[in-house]
Length: 438
Ligand SMILES: Cc1cc2nc3c(=O)[nH]c(=O)nc-3n(C[C@H](O)[C@H](O)[C@H](O)COP(=O)(O)OP(=O)(O)OC[C@H]3O[C@@H](n4cnc5c(N)ncnc54)[C@H](O)[C@@H]3O)c2cc1C
Image (tube, rainbow, N blue to C red; front, top):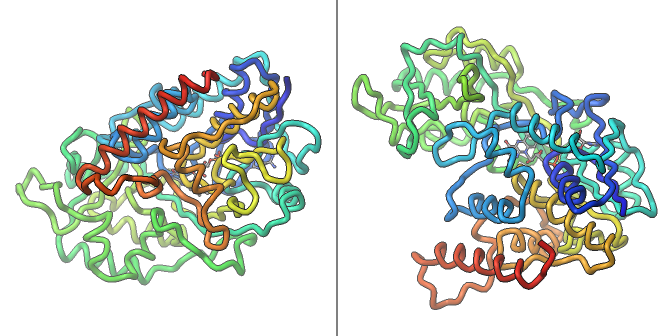
């Protein structure tokens, strides 16, 4: 049994693992480090290109539920996240190098995975192929996919937050506290008084913005609301940031006992706390402008930037027009697409696609029907959106409770979440028992 996986990101790494552990001979193509994407920096598999948070761990949150389902199905990405976990309060925050190092080493240790560091330019015809080349799929491969699927690509822009060196911060002005009181060592807070806040706000909205790479020119920027550039958010009104990422509620300054006018939160990038990212500070500002404006934040006057914010293209297909909920394409049953490219949004969601495509490619290889995950699970609800939503208005989607269907009207609003989560867990267990594939 043989399969090809294109791209060793979050989805491709998970897919390769699911295939290899079931005895399939896998050829895993990854173009890095020979050719980097505009956002990746290393040759490691499953590199996290922006935040080091995999979002909520709380089972009553859609992201937490998705993680629990993936863990139940033996996900490599979940194993790596547990191995590389850092203190992060409610969120599953990881040391990005440990995380991708674990995944790279695990896949390298499989004798039945052949790793090929090469850019794939054309999708192989007659083999079982999983395309997991992500939102920054290289141009020739995107073209090859377009030729097979016959649909137009869409694109919009995501933005990265800057990372600063801990040694360059003035800790006398900062304090540790978690807004929800889960773990007070997980966020470093920068209090701002009224004057400091408005001075920063004025500089931010008037700063010069970078207009994008050559490949992005001429395209209309369509932002994903969850990753809106900070200056774009600020332009919506002088108070928007104070009620958004810079809100002071739940973060009293221990020196005054009062909640500051505004607070910038810094999240540790590793267990040693040698680097911090500015929470919610995804940005399109030009690099010298980032230095000038972000150094106006108290305590960051001498900040050394380890990574600047940036914007990048995001490529995805019009999935409902061309995909089945098994993650097979409608035109070719042996061609699977997984990850951000198929229209899920987020790291864990990408891993979910890899897991499903890996299992289904194995089933196809072993002469069985690929499976459709039940729609009452978080995995099934997301796949239902991918395959069955309106193709005309299709946009990438992350895990969220709103995707669940068939909630009996008698369930009261306050009990909905509990009902959905309980039903999802019971449905998955029952389905695992019945399907006899795990
Ligand atoms: C700039 C940016 C920031 C993001 N920030 C976040 C965030 O903070 N949180 C979040 O949850 N999600 C974020 N996302 C969305 C998404 O979760 C990530 O992009 C995620 O990495 C998607 O996983 P993937 O496996 O689909 O793609 P990737 O992880 O990008 O993996 C695809 C792999 O395919 C390789 N590849 C591409 N073309 C070829 C080819 N022709 N041949 C061989 N290999 C190829 C690439 O090198 C890459 O390793 C962000 C996306 C972008 C673009």
